[in-house]
Image 1 (tube, rainbow, N blue to C red):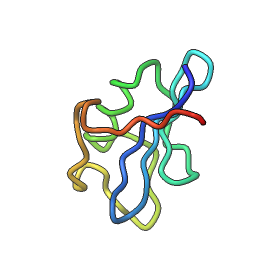
Image 2: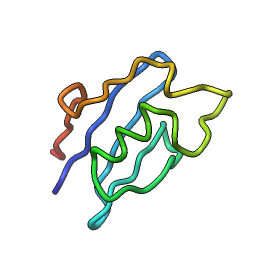
Image 3: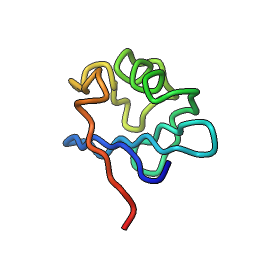
Image 4: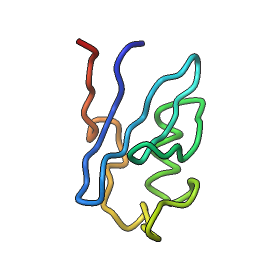
Length: 77
């Protein structure tokens, strides 16, 4: 799959990027974890179960979408 999912917040961009058969969850350039599915990444992010965010931010308090349909998809050009 080419492309990635993203969601922009006032604190920065969260991205879910396919890498091989897994998905990296990023906040800006920082890797918050590697997951077997996009849904697993979103579940961990929305519940705050990722590597710590910078500046003591809490993803569980950011109002992030809990469903993939709330994320945008960017295709490569």
